[in-house]
Image 1 (tube, rainbow, N blue to C red):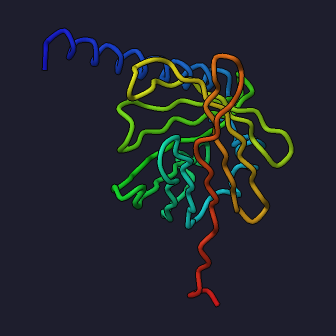
Image 2 (image 1 turned 180 degrees about the vertical axis):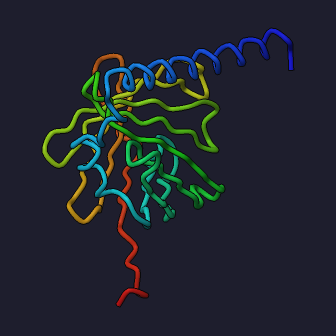
Length: 193
């Protein structure tokens, strides 16, 4: 690894660690412990569990691709965040993704950062809740052109954890082209019966 890159990585790690340590020390000075899990994160806990994910990728050219994947969703870091790990096959290729979701109490929006085996970088999205749904928005990089691409999505979450997600690419004129629909169905644990 190039020495300047190593120095940059170490500096970034120290900056992040120092910032976190400062916040913890500031809370301790004020007599506060770590903040409680927010009401918004408690609402999001309904998506925790094992799921069969039915994905329908809407292709611009050629037939649409339908796949069934598996997602394991669990709380991490004392319930302050949720981690999703998805595996399976999409369009005949192995697929794996990892996402971290949470609620930013300061900015008052949900966020998710994801990486997967088909995308060369991370995908960062933010969303606002309206009733039982979250409206997501992101800007990512098109893997073919290297240009920014805006996306919008709607995620509906039922009380039993079933989720539906519909995502679309936002065109320069504001029009939208749907590109994927996913339905998360909870996998029942028959051993508990």
